[in-house]
Length: 278
Image 1 (spheres, rainbow, N blue to C red):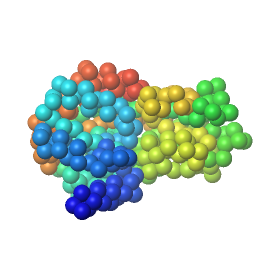
Image 2: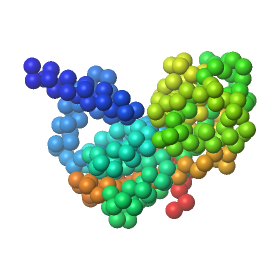
Image 3: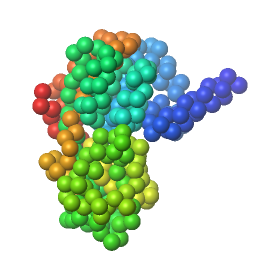
Image 4: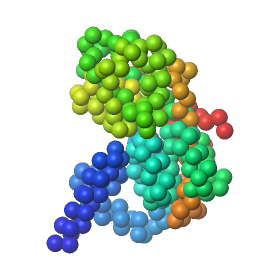
């Protein structure tokens, strides 16, 4: 009975995260979270709120980090940076925030909600036009013009109101002069990972997604993409920060140093991130 109750509570927690457009690594299919909790009890936990473009890159980063810091156990929840910002204003229980832009961490810093001098740039994101491998749309040849093809009924982008990748996609549409044509066809995802899911599932014919997702091994062979030139959309300077209420500041600082270090930058580069200016 107790195990059933725990499983039910975990299901409710996961449903709540999904309703907010967030995905937790402890909420995967077939997982009741007990193994993750046991690992956390044995080590030093660091809870990370990560922009959804990091969904696959951060899994590799966390795995490499754990090998060099076996006593520190990293757990991540993925979602839109804007939704995380709203939660962190109320001191949501995260230790490190990895945003898809610089603005949300800056605001948290100005509000006194971060550790002094903990803000850092970890990469510059890119966007890409993406379509499933079986789509008749020649994305690689058409580029942005693929979004205006008569056969395209729905175009997925992240919600610009709270997702930096949505604002980048909207900016790219305007830069190429096709926003008015495409706007009636737009389908908005809560975050850029959900945007990709819309296209994968057939809810949209094509989308503008994070290049980091298009390059991820689980996605790479299931679609075709065209990189949007970096100078044709708002810059996605991705910034992290340690929260003031972090339970283990030293452990969070070690993860921060790894992300900003040579190995962290190399892994991020494999997923299409450009190096930060600093």
